[in-house]
Length: 157
Image (cartoon, rainbow, N blue to C red; front, side, top):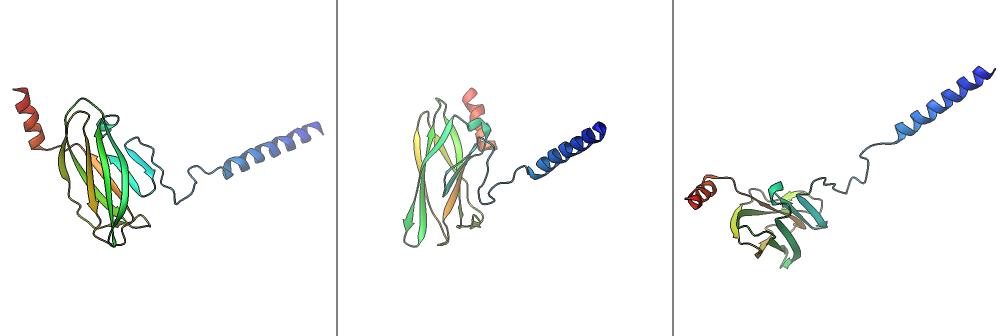
């Protein structure tokens, strides 16, 4: 009789644990919230997302002060990029506009090159080309091309 009770208790315990584990779904959350598990993306503003195109820029380049307004029926934005280091950077930036549902508006965005001196602040503006534009992503990256490598090579001489 005691062994039957122990067997029943064991089965109930195992069944309870199995039920709890089965109900614990991993990664389930609000499907409308974007989750970023890397430190190269800042989505603290609900209508603006800042992306650093390289982990080498983390803690060296900051993007702040996202301002969004209207230019007639079109959205406009301005972002400040700051060099937090004592190094000079040649960088590129790109705006990508999105509608209220997060879908891209406009294709073939152009990368624009700029130079950021040590501790310098620069602001970059963009006006959306589509009146449905609601939010934007601005990406700043290190260009990796022949001209940058040539410039570095000539500086060494």
